[in-house]
Length: 130
Image 1 (cartoon, helix red, strand yellow):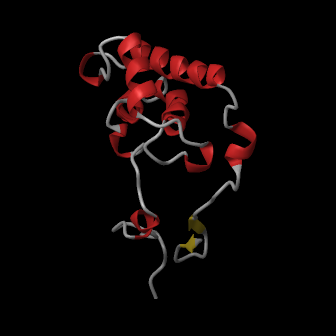
Image 2 (cartoon, helix red, strand yellow):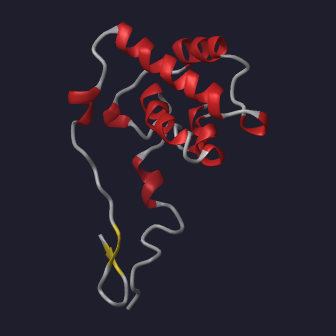
């Protein structure tokens, strides 16, 4: 946790442990349904300069063959699980989230090491420095 000069909470790191244990799909049909959802949302809201795939079919093919499904326990990595999380935000902020559901993962759905989070220049940037 980080506190500002007035001792108010200004930042924290939170983790939901074993989220995937409850929410990971257990069948191929469920996984395909998630991919279908991602691709339909992407094609509906990501167009023009935000377009990620030329069609729903291309999107489905790409996600089924080039990206591991992963787990919601690792919902910040380069997997389908991460893209499914960001798919819920695409309609709200397409300019931010379209790249996250696309082939590159847009910096959000990319494989990272634990060091990635703690080596950010603004990590705890709001914290009061004494």
